[in-house]
Image (tube, rainbow, N blue to C red):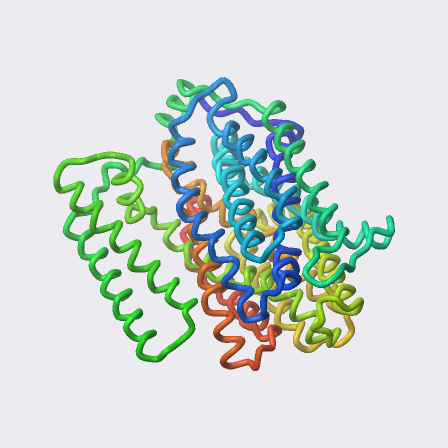
Length: 496
């Protein structure tokens, strides 16, 4: 028994929820730094305010993936998680622009990002569950299309409300403008409605059918029989803990920024988890904690290679999301006063630029599988990431805001590929019974670069670049080009 090929509209319905997810994600990315700065955050402290969200993602993503692999309800296997995440995200979107203080806004970003992860993570496994291998590139391309469309509208919404409906984009000091508030309200509704569409318009295979598919899948093998020696796991854990302690000691001696402690402490925390898992395995325990922690060392070869591609790709993206507003308003508009019309004009233009790159991503989403078929998925991803890297670097050399649109074209091509090609390559290499879990672990390498970006970019911009955020975008550009080069070493089973 094999999975049947789905029609265009069936793939459309099962991917439609991503329209809402990305609508909320775009509002968060384009406006969170603006909200923080309006509530009194300084330039070098903005990245650290993003920290709580990705830290939560590191915990939420593998757990949601692990649970969804083992869930079956009247709504199916993955869809209950779409729905719960959508409800929580909608509530967070309603509340965040009304935050009375900076710490409340940071808390709401944490809740919003965690809720988006609850919805988003199972969507990747949903495609792999429902589509045969030969249709997965199309399935992830369809997700890229909806991500692009949702992000276009979400990014430009404050600009539309201001310029088309005369909603104010300025407010007294410490108050979020009405254009941002209403954008978040509308975004919450779109998020919920789009996810409900997928929940009720799509189906999932039963556990019995999935078991049959697993037995017939010749391209992937379950890796549960590949054991990691407890001693090896213990040594990895101890090594990470030693590195962490050495890093903390160095930071204390050098009197460096406190934000860097988060990064080195995180390494030590993972090391402790490996040590505990090794001890529990030695004693014969096989609970979910042991399974989740051990399988971190059991990643398939293709996944390990893609990890580095993801890390440098998403480091570049987070540099862009965190610093584009400050880079454009300061470097190009020469405005730093958040209450001024010029600053808010520049901030609104960033929304337009984010709309452009997402619009480009939506337009090229279905072109990428065609290019991949004529070349390969690796070459397609390489070309896209190099174009995106040059797009980010070019921002430094531009003085006319209108020309930034050209920079965003390159970023948009890269964004479309980042959302589809790595997942298409990965899905053919994963054991079907652990698809949700490993998709969740793969998202670590979206979250980890966010943590790195949030902990070191503020320090680097402040220490080496005289608090000029545009240099963070240059670093992001080179990081994206490096990711493209690393793609060439990935083993893509579809090309075997």
